[in-house]
Image 1 (cartoon, helix red, strand yellow):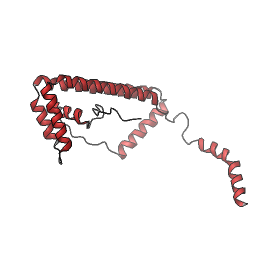
Image 2 (spheres, helix red, strand yellow):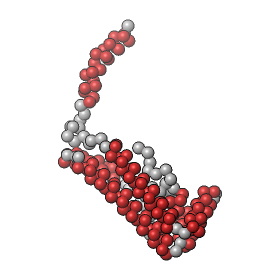
Image 3 (cartoon, rainbow, N blue to C red):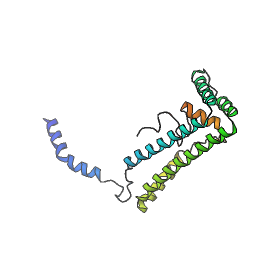
Length: 188
């Protein structure tokens, strides 16, 4: 009987509790809007297209012998008990003609620039929907996040065609903006 009384009381007060919970401490003016997932999917589709085109262009820029060498080196890395990616990248880089290396780096740079432009445009479009209070809240959150979790320190290296080809062939790009993995950008 007590359980029925408690259940009845819970049902009577549930609508009031729901209203109380939906009223947050943050005013509606400063609550950040939800991201536009359709726009994000469109951006990812555009980035995937950029990456696929870059991949095709890079492979087309290689001689048949160098495409075969790339396949052989990528295959050897796949089965090696202790793969040496740096040595593989150096071997590819040394084998390429100067024209091939320039073409690979130029295509990679162009694709990276296009991807960055898409990401910057998406960020600017999102920020344009924010009120000044929301912008301030977002800046505060970003600052708190960066203080709590410092950015990863990436080792800076001079771009080289061998490393770019290896990332393209093995799908192991450490640079998400290029995303040369065969499956494209991560799912939403």
